[in-house]
Amino acid sequence: MNLNDPFGRVEQKQQNSYASLKRSLQEAGVSTPAEGESVLSGMLRRAGVITLLVVLITAVVWLLFPQWLAATLVLGAIILLWLLVTTLNGYSLVRRYIRDELSSERNS
Image (cartoon, rainbow, N blue to C red; front, side):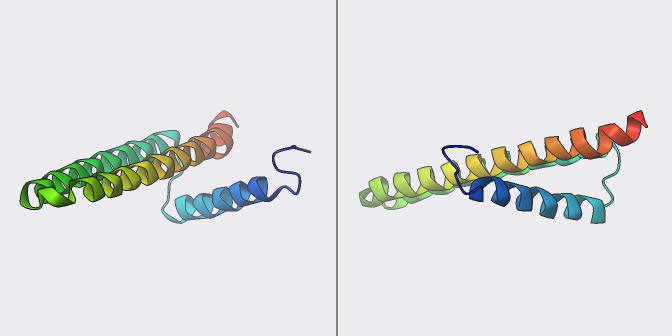
């Protein structure tokens, strides 16, 4: 029993997220560690593109509407924080899928 999660809600949510991702990856035909690594690199590439877009949009809004700088920076920071957390969670779930599902098949 985890003192920070006495009812197991966080663990259950993580398990449900993993089961959903696992199903999606299997339906997409990800069946080798190399394909899993390709999914990971795609995730990082998309996160980089989104980060660049958020920074560019923030800069354009700042140039066009300097009086909105504070609000724009706060909104941009929130979006980037959400992107970071989402990407890290997804990355760890795909890593787990590669370790648990694909590496065991390779060693069998």
